[in-house]
Length: 392
Image (cartoon, rainbow, N blue to C red):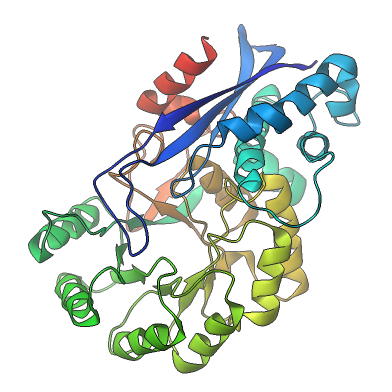
């Protein structure tokens, strides 16, 4: 049993949208295939992965460092990448192999490269075991039984040149019509008064049981974050997300002192150590705030498991974790390890976002089908891209 190849292709996910910090007109991602010599159901087992939107494709890093290390180990000592029983790949050993000769700290974008390959490895591991990844995670790291019913919210509300308030309302209504109970929109890319008008327009649309979250994408300094917080305090928001720079823990802590509603952050923290610093120094409140760490951007599930262990040590429930990214990997983690839910992009960044075909949102929840691996094969448009990469 061995990995015979790791393939990468940098793909465009460009879109004429922007948040408070960046536009997506030149955005890319890396699509990865981990090819094994294992055969299941008459086909070779291939694991797939890709990185979340907001960080660019990392193919060069993968080809220079991380892929060669794994392939060299697989060719020279394939047993070094297997579990103790010798009947499957071991994601933890493969992770250590990828990170050989990498200094601690300075995580940068290597965390995205490793996290993308790691996703594909876990997909392959669950397929070799011939079981859904969420079931495997529940049995190995959770309470023994997964819960395939997962809360999801609809992320959108980007600034677009031709979309005014009516366009924003139409977009949000389309998400509500599809069964979402929580929708999210961007703030910070317009003056405060204009953003408040946009927020109020959406709030007026909502029915009982429906809520709005807002996301500033790290745009604000402390004064602006607090000024927005004072204005947002007048609204019944689901959360106020990423007001300032993700590494400015003092800003986050002071905002928490001034804003009593729920805060959310963490999608741009790329290691267990950075996540721990947020918990230690960011003033996050375990009774109301949300943590958005995204395994695809932060060294993968191997590192995410360390992060969950750290959170447990600090008294945090995994239900306060609602990952960024809108991908099926986080859905599997949520179902297997009891997270609080997952982000969803109903229309954007396709075909990489969304759910397997036929999965519908019902009052803010989806039920994951019982597909081996992460379940990419259940989404036809995405799986077509993956098959084109692997040639199988």
